[in-house]
Image 1 (cartoon, rainbow, N blue to C red):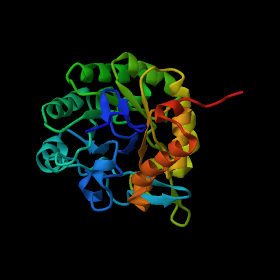
Image 2 (cartoon, rainbow, N blue to C red):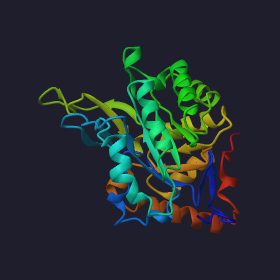
Image 3 (cartoon, one colour):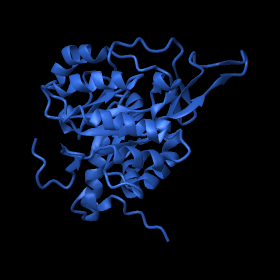
Length: 308
């Protein structure tokens, strides 16, 4: 991959990318689902849906619904498992000249380690993104991502087992996201993804029952962008590792706001469901912006927010 002397090239935690636009985990399948709409070779990176130690069936229906300016999902990390991914999905992605980042989830530290160790031995994996919003069954179901001690322990143990760049996806459902960010940075994270979905729910007023079978789900889309921007900005002021900004990015302008807030790269998520070409439109829009402003590199925009 030639990323030399391009105004769009970035290095995110050791992953060299031709541009700073990625796909958000859970919104782009395993990549092959979108290959007829998007030239994967033109993306900065493909982040595939979450992979676990064994196949997961996910939650029962209903598990997705549209909301005002967004969507709720409670898919439940349905996936083919790490062995299935390596055997059935990864070979297809190897034919493309694009970094493949695998989102990883588990219910225990041991489960995370199983997945990461197998991915570390697989050809074609450029990096790992830890989803620390998963419930920790060893601690009564508390999410790894809401407790700095649990998050630090998980990241430290995973880091010791892999040579791959390690990204950590932060949960917004915490009192102070900067505490978690500093904890995982101290544990060895190479970059941060911010943010994961906001916890929400929807109710049917006629039946007085929840719309989702799981009762609650993750809110994403334009509705969460203001929250995501604020949290990226707060994290940026407190860590020294790169941030991948995400949460409601529907256009290049949205993405530019995340760079200004402190993100070094962005991930397009929910937009993929309504516009399969959204990620490429964001890439093209950023390129146009740099040309119009005579900015020599996207890096010059990172953290450039002017606060009086």
